Every structure is written in C-alpha cells, then in structure tokens.
Amino acid sequence: MITLHTWATPNGRKISIALEELDLPYEVRTVDIGRDEQFAPEFLALNPNNKIPVIEDSDGPAGKRLVLFESGAILLYLAEKTGQLLPADPIARLRTIQWLMFQMGGVGPTFGQTHHFRRYASDQTYGLERYTKETHRLYRVLDGQLAHSPYLAGDEYTIADIATYPWIARFELHALTWDQVPHVKRWFDRVGERAAVRRGMAVPKI
Image 1 (tube, one colour):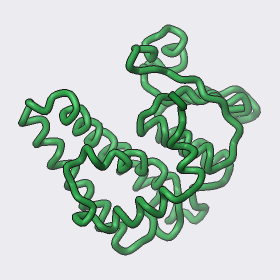
Image 2 (cartoon, rainbow, N blue to C red):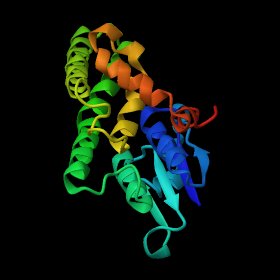
Image 3 (cartoon, helix red, strand yellow):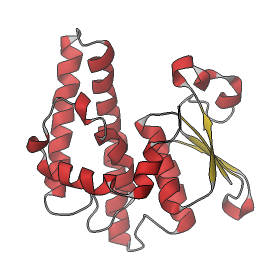
C-alpha cells in the first residue's frame, strides 16, 4: 500500500494522476497547506523541506518501506516500480526524463510564481510581468514541441505529460488564449480525456 500525503496543487496532482494511471492501491492523507500543516513535526519527519507531495511505500525496493519526496523523483520511482509510463528504449527514456526536468526546472517554478503574483500581488508590476513573460515563453516551447508529436516526449504518453498537465490546467491564470498555443490545447484536451487523469485531478477531495 502507498500512502500519498498531498494537497490540491499541481505538484500533488501529478502523483495522484500517476497512481491512478498505474492502478496502484493508495490511500490519501491531506496536508492542508493553507493551515500550515506541512510544518507539523510528523510531516517534517517525512520531508524536512516541508513540501507536498510525499509518498510512503510499504513495499519499496527489496520489500523495505520507502519514504520519498519531490514530485519528479516520485514519478520516476513509480514508473520504474511498475515498468510503465517511462519507455524502455534508452533514447526515448532520456527524452522523457528531459521533458520531466523541463517541467520541474521551468514550468513548475515559473508558473507557480505567476500564480502567486496574479492572485496575491498583482500590484507588483515588475514581478507579475517578469513571470508572465517567462510563462508565455515556456508555453511557446511546449507548443513547438507538440506541433510535431502527440505527447511531450514523442508518440508515447509518459510521466512527462503527467507532470505538466496539472500546471496547464491552471491556464486561466496565465494571460493567454488557446489560439496562441493550439498544439498545447490539442494535447491538453487529449490528456484530459483520460479517465485516470480525471480521477487524479479530483484528489484530494476537499
């Protein structure tokens, strides 16, 4: 059994989508970051960086209990554990990891700052303009890649798509229209039609 410590954020939903896609049994423990529950001693014992998501796998490597944080690391672990959502071919595998890292190092941090300024500090013109501009650039990169492949790493749906989808799901905060990034829209609709994605996006129920 896997225990998922999570909240209703893009990073949290990456993992619930993956668990649903992989049909792995899991239970959810909510960590209400609006109430600072991520700073509770029992959570810090799992992740000293006080961020969700975290998983506990009672059947980790060699049958030992595993506690793992950082959403990218968790996605890689779950894919390797099951042999799914990460291609076996070395080149396709590296391309998948490449686009996963693009999300981790670019899309997530930049979009997160855009969300913050648009929701809580829209009067801070410099910050809002800086991160919105970079958000748009990242969209153009995604749109260019998706212009010639159905999924981010190529023809196969992978953890790179799972990592990116929940961030694009907050499109209304990004000051774009879909006609500016039509290939992202096509991809977004395709991924969003998956039953496991719909279930994962509804976790946790709050």
